[in-house]
Image (tube, rainbow, N blue to C red; front, side, top):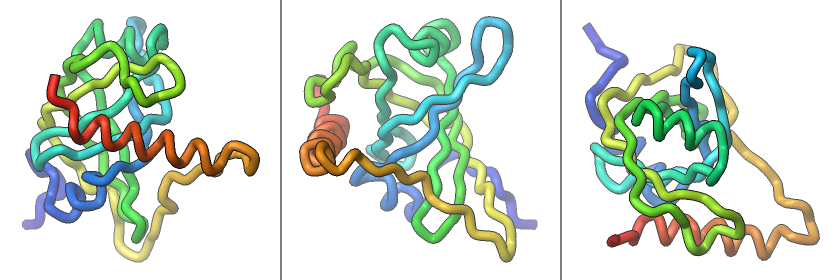
Amino acid sequence: MFSRVKPTLSRKVAEYASPGSPGMLLTIDSEGYPHTAFTWIVATSLQQLRFGADQGSTTLANIERSSLASVQIILDEGQPYLIKGRVTTLSPRIKSAPFEMALMEMEITEVLDQSWIGVSVRALDYEWAPKEREKMIEVEQAVYAEMREWGG
C-alpha cells in the first residue's frame, strides 16, 4: 500500500522549495494551542529546511521551548505537504531581512502528502503593495539566497 508519510522530502518537493518558497510555520504554545505564522522556506537537502522566525514572536518562543515545528508548503500544481521536524537556531539574525528575523534549520522527521484525488489546493501567495513591490521582491530573493548559502 502507498504510504503518504515519508521520512524525508521527495526530490519533487525539494526542487520546488530549494530556490525559496513562502509557507506556513506551525508551532504549539505553552498551553498546547496551535500557532501559525507566514514564513520564507528554503530546502537545503532532502533532510533539511531553513526558514525565518521573527525575533520576539510567539513562534520563536514556541520553537525555543520545544525545538519542534511544522511547515506547510503548497506546490504550484496544488499539492500540499506538511513537514515536521526538530529545529535549531543557526543565527539570531537574517541580515538581508528588513526586520529582525532568526534563521532556523529543521532536521526533517516526517513529510505528509496532504493531497487528495481530484482536488487542487491554491499555493500560498501574497502581493506586495505596488509602491514597495520591486524592492520587496529583491529583499525576498536576498533572504532566500542568505538562507541557502548560510555557512555560520
